[in-house]
Length: 440
Ligand code: XLS
Ligand code: NI
Ligand code: NI
Image (cartoon, rainbow, N blue to C red):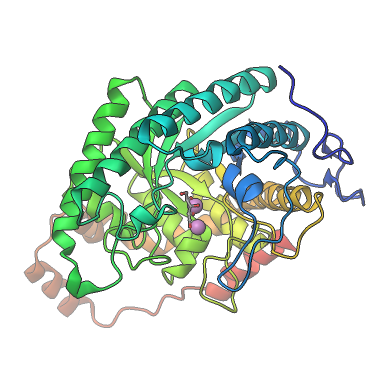
């Protein structure tokens, strides 16, 4: 079975043409086989396209209906349209050259009138997707279940106060895990859109958190029993749609995973725009996850400085991407995770080529960022400005403290004997200039 060539007929395979090219349908920096830090770019970056934003999201907003016209909505039967959509998606992937994609159960296949019918729809689409994957070599970075769109989840999914709703969430996750395994997915994501609460005083946070723990352990056990060997990932987000209690940011999720004894199987999927919604930078949350040994994957997007929403812009801010790639390189890479463009074209971007421009922009930005990040890491000034500051812990008394061998009395006695410490500059401006020198 070959995917068609009818949905994006004006676009050919996107090639690397270099920075002198002015072809808007070519890469200027993403040269997938270029070696950076000992590895081809493609393997560092592991780009994925998000099925929902690119092929399912009509770009409605709270003020108006969707603006996109989907040429793959050819029929009045949603199951047929799901098949056309899959065909269009694989045409797009083949032309763009992304190695991975990600989906929710409900963007891949429509919900049926019963659990059994929904399962059947999903199975049908999964077997088609398996054929397209085989034909194109494309891989699944992760699967997930949409536990937030259906009205039944208005009070949450796994944290719903009504056990019957929790069961429906379980049914969906079971089927989505099976789909992920069948398609060779390397990770499985939980983003708890409607977990959390809208009013604290009709909510028992601890109870909901414990129920979520039971739910995630059941999902883990089932996944392992059907041969899922990849990482389970939790994607932190502080709000929107609900206020969150267990997944506000990376640090909160790590505490939750520890409380619920899930650290052996779960890692984090960090999204740029979610980190900024939590009042952090993208690189901050990546660093928190990485230092805990829990950086699993990345949703590469960005917010808008002028508002506080999850705007899911395509990531075209170079500085942001450079900072992210420093963390990724220092993490020893992102595999088996990847960089998933959990991003959408703007509501007024209605040219079919806009979806290509958007991904090309994101892919070029992170490719350039990878090169710059590697240059920064290899500049001796970087190590001096960062690790050099901690030199006093590398020998003598400081080293003894670092190893846990100094009491408060000993600290006091040393302070009394040494007098006022010298003022060591943090040299932040020099550090910023170092970054700019590599970027400009
Ligand atoms: C929404 C989330 C969502 C997850 C997958 O804000 O980013 O897209 O990545 O459910
Ligand atoms: Ni996301
Ligand atoms: Ni998001």
